Amino acid sequence: MTVDKKNWNENEAILHSLQEDILVTNTDGIILKVSEATGDIYNVDSKEMIGKSVYDLEKEGVFSPILTPIVLKEKKKITLVQTSKEGKKLLVTGIPVFHDSGELVRVVSYSHDVTELLNMKKYLTDMEHEMERVKGELEILRSRHHHSEGIIATSDEMKMVLQSALQVADVDVNVLLLGESGVGKSHIAKFIHNKSQRKAGPFIEVNCGSIPDSLFEAEFFGYEAGSFTGADKKGKVGLAELAEGGTLFLDEIGELTLSNQVKILKFIQEKQFYRVGGTKQRKVDFRILAATNKDLEKAVDEREFRRDLYFRLNVVPITIPPLRERTSDIMAMIDYFVTFFCEKYQRERELDEGVIHQLLIQDWKGNVRELMNLIERLVVTSSKQLIEMQNLPPGYIKQIGDISTFEHDGQSLRDILEAVEEQVLKNAKEKHKTTTLMAQRLGISQPSVVRKLKKYNIK
Image (tube, rainbow, N blue to C red):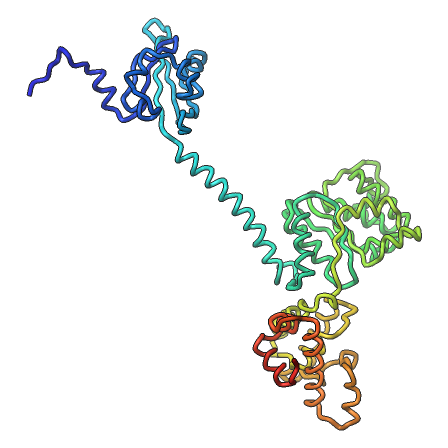
């Protein structure tokens, strides 16, 4: 077969053989050449595009924005994202073509359909947002049980505390932790620090109640060499200065004297201070967390605590409930502390059900600290693997109902324990609607609850 070279245009043949969108314009934006693939991309007839102006095609909505004027202005290769009438996203590249004389005479452009790529990018962005949301939920889920900060939370009350702590962790807002002694305020403070952007920085805890009033300023702000009798000859860096880039936790803030409250207020407001005996002003970048077991509002009314300092600290208050108000945490803590101290002292110990019931109904005025100390005592002092009622200190054997009469009636310990168990189950049945919830609160399995209710004929 012979080729008709007279009627055959090699350049045109090569242009149309390409499966790419290629378009050539002059400096006025008039289309001179176009590949067949171009028409398919823009849903027009390629042949009808020849001779038309790209400016007119933009007005008609065939594609936007146009590339030609940008290439003419910049006189260099330009790439941008163009949108077709059908909503396709095209990555268009325009290349200037120069004459031997150096004059720009043509603009050649080619494109790639990147609609799917952009959709994929949007999908990935949405997935990133979803992952961030799930990450936040996982943080909360992890907060329900054991943490490296020593927090155990299975109750709704403590879950809310941890959720509030997570919400404020990433912002340098002042947080005031409220609650009775031993509820775990310092653990929550460490939790906030470890979840914050300052986690790589130091966590400096200042127990405002343990530092003598006369030494507080020197301990907190530090002092220069020879500033007072008995001072270190080299001087000393204060606790405030050590908190640079991290978190400064003022525990027992309610124990500060009024004179030291003034100094703390000025320090928090200005974030700068002088060492005792020093003349150089020092600045420090820190985040303030404070805690107290006192009623600061009452202390303010009684003029024992400065109102301006109270409002400076009380930006976000978080109240940690006492242990007696979150009984479902008690069982989790019992399990945790028994395991912990058994491993620490290399002993095998477990608690009798009667002991567990007694622990569940205590007032726990010392809260978590008291429970932890008692479990440690029981693990260390018990001589048998099973820790029974007789191992409990007298103060922890709480009478329920008319339990005191059992001893006078000559009943056995087993009978007394069963009576205690029956009373506990009755109390739980009154408070909780389902056996599942009863099991969660009592720290036993749901089948055990059903079996025990049947045993004592509790309906």
